[in-house]
Amino acid sequence: MTYLSHVPSGTIVVGIDGSCPSERALGWAIIQAQLEHRPLTLLHGVDLRSIDLSGAVGLDPLVVPAALKGQGQALLSAAMRGVAKRAPGLEVITAHVPVDPREALVDASTRATMVVLGSHGRSPMKTLQLGSVSLAVSRNAECPVVVLRPQEPTTEDNGILVGVGGERRNLPAVEFAYQQASFRSQPLTVMHGFWDIHGRMGLSLMSAGEAGSEDELRIVAETIAGMSEKFPDVKVSVQLRRGLVEDCLIHAGKGMGMIVIGAHPDRMALDVLTGNPTRALLEYAECMVAVVPSSTRSSA
Image 1 (spheres, rainbow, N blue to C red):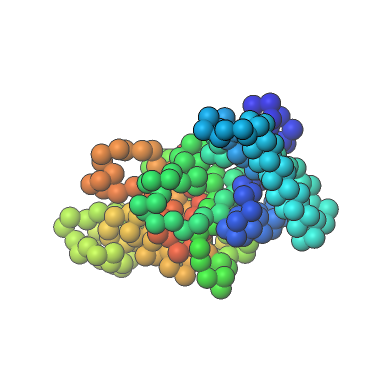
Image 2 (cartoon, rainbow, N blue to C red; image 1 turned 90 degrees about the vertical axis):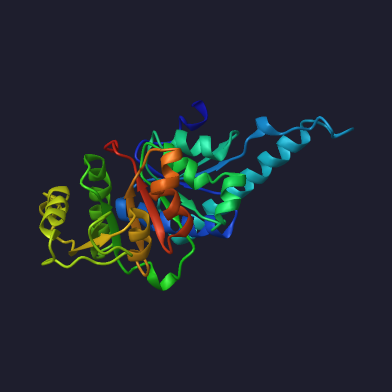
C-alpha cells in the first residue's frame, strides 16, 4: 500500500500504541535492530474507516479522525525521541497508517525482516471476544513475528527454545532460533514434542537410551542438519517430550527467554481435539514467543 511505500525493505517493524507492553516491545526491537544493523520502523495504525459518528448530533465528522491522527502522530514522535536517547545513530522510520493495526502490520510484514509486538496478556475469553492483534498478525505475516509476553525480566537472557516436528515447514523456525541464539550469545534448546499412545504421557521427558528414542532423535537430527556448521558459536541441547506440542513447549519454556515455533495454519474444528500451538503459546507462554512462517524472504 502507498502509505508504506517509504518503509525500507529488511526493516524491523514494531507496533506502537502507547501502552506499557508496546514500550517493552520497542525496547527489545531497538536492541534487535542494533544487533542486526537494520533500520527500525515504528508503526501506529488506527482504523478511521470504522468510526461511526451517525449518532453524534452536532459533532463535526472531521474532528474525531483528526484527533485520532494527531494522537497517533504524538505517540510516534514520543517513541522516536525514546529511540534517539537509547540508540543514537539508529535509522528510524515512522508510519502512521489509517487502517486496522492488524491489516497494517501484515502489510508491513511484506517488507520487513521481523515484526515485534507487545502482549497485554489477555485472558482467552477476552481474546475470543475482542480479537488478538498478535494472533491475527502471526497467522498472516510473511516474516517472523515476535510477541513479548509478560515475563520476569530476569528470564529474558536464559536461552531460546525451538519446537521441531520433522516437517519441512519447521526449517525456517529452526534457522531463526539459531540466528537469534547467535545474535544474543544464548544457548539453544531444540525440543521435539510428540504424542505417544504406547508410552508415558503427562509432559514426561524421554531419555536418550529409552526405547523409541532413536527414531525421535533421528527426526531432530534431520531437522537441524547443517545448522551447527552455519552457527558454530551456538551451544545446543536436545529434549524429547511426550504430550501435546503446545503443552510441551509451554512447560519446557518456563524460565526461557524466547520460544520459537513455526506458524501453524488454522485447523478449525481439529483445534478442539489437538490444540493450536500458536494460539496456546500466545495466550499462556511465560516468555516472548516468535512465530515464523513456513517460507521467509531473505531480506537485504
